[in-house]
Length: 418
Ligand code: PMP
Image (cartoon, rainbow, N blue to C red; front, side, top):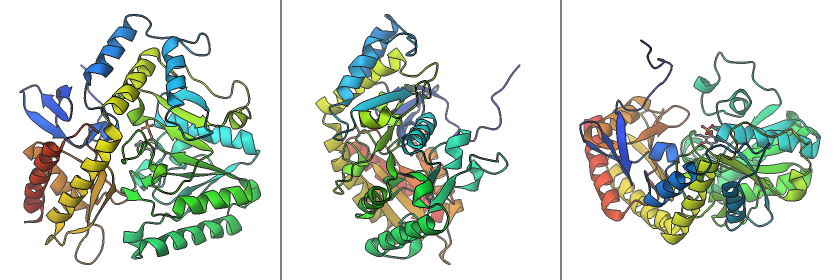
């Protein structure tokens, strides 16, 4: 007899047997409104018929190709199709299986391309759990304690978390950029710094959109000092925030390296880094790869994902439903002092819980998340102190489902704060 390792921490006790759109079903046929989307993965919803059909068709033709041995058609098709959505100039793509691997691939590429060793990340960052990516992760000591020493050469600068800093957006950006300049002057000089790694919306660290001006400020410093700007859009990409990429919200900032995963293949393990070909050429031959990278079934599912996002106008839907969700969450928070901040971008929405003394309140956040699950609404917590409840439904969510979620959420908050 074996059992699942107790090392796994799980947000709900649900055993899912089937998924359809924004719903999950358990063995008893109970239906759950899934506002976790597998941590922001199933953008096209669970088991979108076109994704299922593409994957089934590909599984009957070729399941494993191994890209260091042979190429295959879904990989070529996906590479061509990504050209229609990638930012201008990022015309070279390389595939891996998970966000963490892609982050590490970006570190390798940045070090090779610049000949410099260090990277700078931003306070509250989550870039993954593998030993390299964990070194870039500052979203909580639980991701680091007792597993080190981690990869050296990582410095941490402030993120413009306006609410926690008690500043308005503009002042928070100024504070964060000044902090970065300080790190460059004191800890990791420009000549030692290969890249800045940043999430356009802090994800696991609390669902904090970078206010306007922050990414542009990073771009300016990267250009000034010959450092690369790496945007980790693992959670924010593929329409999640109401633009195809989160960095396209107004800033006009283009990264040197873009990292994507999660929404890319609707649940099949696939990730990628994209960069200008001239930059990719600086990676030393053989320095990137892996047995399962660019799996044919995952690539076919990713092509179908792109089709669905385009044909069903899911990026626009994410923007519209996201507004509805945020408005509803604000209404639900009115008169609830425990919810101190409601924020989000597109379909990344969050409520931050706080005690009367202003300290983070993970206990109430957890109670609200658990109460919601009992009512049939699946949610996740996040944040450095896990005091934030986040909502990340599939991009196919409609306004009735948003309404249903908001009504369950209000009940959950009432029971958690009673
Ligand atoms: N970067 C970001 C921004 C993420 O949100 C995550 C996963 N939550 C990762 C990297 C790591 O991805 P994975 O779990 O696929 O390794």
